[in-house]
Length: 249
Image (cartoon, rainbow, N blue to C red; front, side):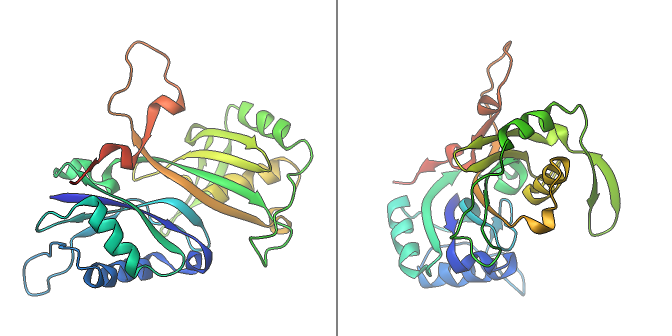
């Protein structure tokens, strides 16, 4: 049986990198007595994979971890036992059964991610938010009307100029925050800080002088039940990863 765990990451835990989060969950599985399966061979390790590793400094309400179980455990019991061993800044939100084939793993099906972007009074604290710059909403509308938004995208091995406009599914103002829905996953992956750097420069601002905080709201897969013969909106195109699982009773 395979299970998908959804969790929050906030507070000081936002400074913990992906490898440390992975080690933390390995210890948490043992302490919570979750019947997780191990690989075979001389050096067995827990069978687990994260859907979309989170950048350092980013908080989130929608992180996902897939594991394999050697025996069933109820969703209610697993969430309860895991939350007992979580530290401040980590909360388990759900524990769901998912299909066992590899094509349904979180790592494979991720297609988009949602973010909230807050402007800060100072880079020293994410708790002191600032108002959005004047005309921010109108600037976003103009920004999205551009047929192409070319940026220099850096990877570990190379640099290349790419058009990020098709990867921005949604960008709009909500209250005093900017909401983003961006392409994510192995096929196309767009980081929110690159979008905001590009937008701030487009709006005549220096990104180095504008402190921001990024909060991931959700991670999405493509909707397996897309309506046919109709124009598809981003709301119809993507579904949260936890909507593809079922409660274990």
